[in-house]
Length: 218
Image 1: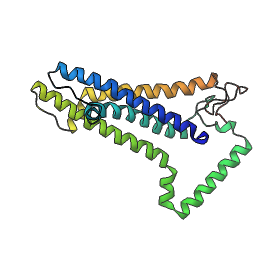
Image 2: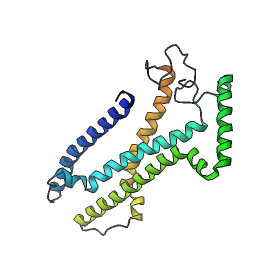
Image 3: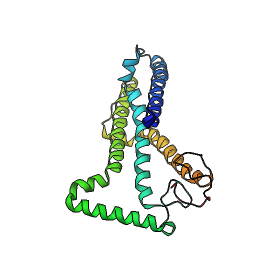
Image 4: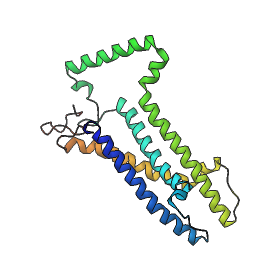
């Protein structure tokens, strides 16, 4: 358990958060339905199948995986001097760092020659997985929003929309952008704050004795 403690704690917090969302979401959704003259959903199970829950869950997940995917890509090519979240600047690399990088390049060349397609995919597998999950949740968010909009239009006696039309709906993009901006800002804040602040014992932080402008946590 000690070796997987971080995953266990974070997944436990995730599950507890989902339960909290389901409980609060059912109450909020039923308040809206009663206000609109509709029957309240009788159970948590019914709410789990509702577009209200699926849409809210998907819009949060899409922003998380977009943020992580972009961070992995950007941290490959861009630097932030002094941040523990950045690679070392080329001019700050030691001889040992340069040798390790050369060994990595040599290994990758050998593997590409032996498995040109599979190894290329493996080289970018983390980014592909994260952005793939983003796309799945983005489309799930769009599908649930489409159903909710048509449900609302039916209640108001308005004509329904097509699935493609949901991408021109202000409400859909409002939900997406309000999540995306918070993710981008939080990652940028971590990168900047890690220049000047520390957390003793954390691999996300530089050592207590490191100067502010040392780049990287290693």
